[in-house]
Image 1 (tube, rainbow, N blue to C red):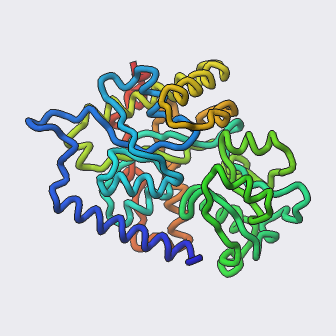
Image 2: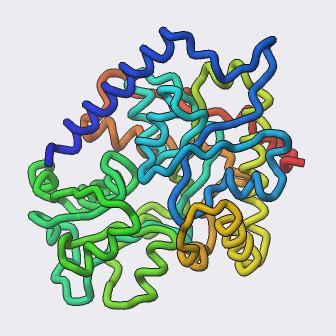
Length: 344
């Protein structure tokens, strides 16, 4: 397997090249003739799970803006690269991945947080009950499975390893393996990997099955925080500001609906969405839902949620030159919760 840094550089280079070609071809298909704003948003979903935009649409919070599902994606970096290159209209990823893609000159802006970590919902780093792995140094020479490289799971893991006193050379000996989330637990139990990064309902289902234990969690390491955001291309925002506003505030309303409803009510709604969309999926994952994990009300983004990863990326040598400012990476302009309006 090539190193994470080499793989990421090639991926970002390809994304930026494709973005340039898309722009040169006249990237303006998102706005209708006569300057009317688009009312249909292309996006990628996740197998057996319901995204916040899908929940917002089902609750009626997107008004006349419709979602057009074009397929599924397993990792955030690939999702926002699809947005940057015009294959989709919005995508979501770990905030550190957004920093990396913007540093590669992709003209995207984060508009609303959509996942995070709290006492109920977090990413955990798990081993089998009989594993000798207890601390950072025990991972040297071991394999770690995660949904995608160069994103949330890797950044948190390496932050933990650094805090555990490992040198860059020692950290390089920890082998990272990209696995689809639905296969990660099985790979751990079959001892194909030594440690598995599990989050959300997939984590809860694995824990309920027994036989695994927690080494650490991102919540224990960093406290409560929003970890990822939805992004749009800058040209799309310029052409369709009201559509972006409807989407952003609608997602914010869905976050607050989920925050204030009984868990059973949210789970029932998620199950009904999966049943109605007819994608031949297993609905069992959503039965373990606990919270969105989003820290800010209505998905409002804070500087801290980007500054943490800007600093980490700079220290690890992933960012060259002057560090970007958090405020240059995101905007709360289109989120009515930022103005204290509650999205009403």
